[in-house]
Image (tube, rainbow, N blue to C red; front, side, top):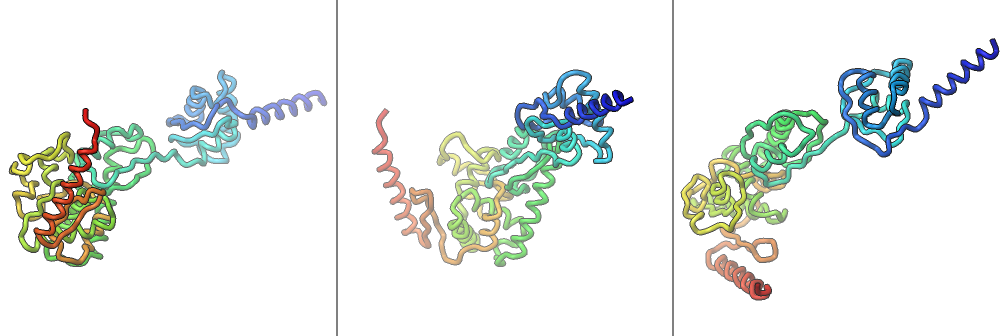
Length: 323
């Protein structure tokens, strides 16, 4: 009898050692656990080298899971398992860990065509990308779990834009040139594509509002590029005089007023700039050669700024090595 007690104690000690000992997983790894309970989870963990090979290890894992079932059910999701996780740690992850969070960043100023490419390349997402209206997605970083549908994350992105646009509209400085939230969104999209400098965004918004007030054409190159590219937002060549003369609803060199819709997805800063433009009589701006813009209230000053830019461009070209 004493020998039996010793044997039982030895078996129990061996089981506990096996339950607590480090496992074979060489490094922290994200593993997708399917539905199927302990048997399905154990099979996947064994295939991914998180559980020792062989039917005995799989049987022991299932027994350990049943004996500790009061700790909670195992879940199906993508989990991060630590290196050399013991059976105890494997079960703890399956029961209590938060699923792996993937991230998708939508930069400011992208068109829906460009955003669709980002969605398509996010391999942790599932399903087809729905048709999305231009400017309806808020640029931001979105966290999601593997298997989330593209339609679901697009719905989140659109809801985020609706909330952010409504916030900008509610807090805005009322402008007669922007009678609706959609008009504010369109203006913000122009601001977004015209400058990346935070301090310049309210100035650009003011230039366009002043032009709208006076009935002047906006003459915004990004609107022409949007129309000429068929909504892609980029051209594989410099903008040409022929592009400026090409009739389309987005050519603000030919059409007076705001474009018929946004030309990109503006970020919060551009929305705020459209809602809170700078004060002033500025009607013109042009690149200053240093990454920013020179603003002017009259045409002669603007032409001087243009001439200064051309001189800088000429000086730079003359310094380039000949080929």
